[in-house]
Amino acid sequence: MRMWPRNLNSLRITGIVLIMLAATIGAGSVWIWMHSHVAWQNHLQRAFNSGLRLSDMLRQQASPPSDLVITQLKPNDILIANKGKFGLLTDQSATPYVTVFSLKASGPKLRTQETLSLAIVSSDLQYPVREIAKTKDGSAAVALGDVTRLLASYCSDPILFARYQDGYWYKIDGSNVWGCDAAPTDRRPHAVLLVLLILHFRSGLRGRATTRVVLLAYLLLTLGYPGVKFVTDILMA
Image (tube, rainbow, N blue to C red; front, side, top):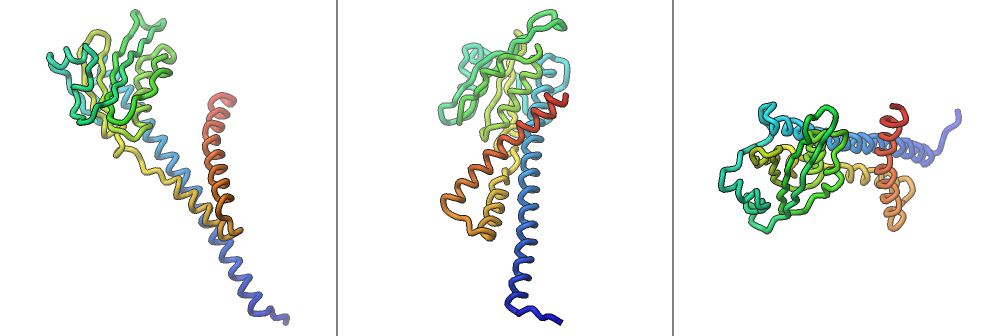
């Protein structure tokens, strides 16, 4: 019976253990990445759905969404809102950023043009709403859903002011939906660190090579999602 040297047996066992460990870490990193991605998409979808329900409420066609705190402005505050001074209607101590815009929609199913007047007050940033203001498929409700989804895309706690047509102004606090604390924890950096750990053990990767691998991984993963959406939503539709 042929006997393998002890050192060789030890190296074989160590190699098998390292391969199994690398496979486990790799599978774990993929799971962490996908779980974080799905949680983020669910977060954005929830914000979009809240915008749809908010639109119905503003039209007096539905009860207020339970996950939003909505208050009707008082007469004195309405005068301030009509002047566009929405920053005076919040409790933010620092000078806030105010984004004022309107959503207008018209279509064959609408007898008159719909107008949603909106203002976003944030202590951190002004929101890029130019493309959203160009409403899709003639629906102001969908555009408002896009607005609330946009709010959920940034780590801030903005206050939304809204008015449908010439109706009442409403102040909407959506901290439970689009606030920083409502967003899921992004664990994708942890997944990248696990991958780097595998590469380090397998090939001794470090320094500039590590940086290049990280940038390449982020590029591929960033482009992967829109690529899949293009194939499933457009090519296979």
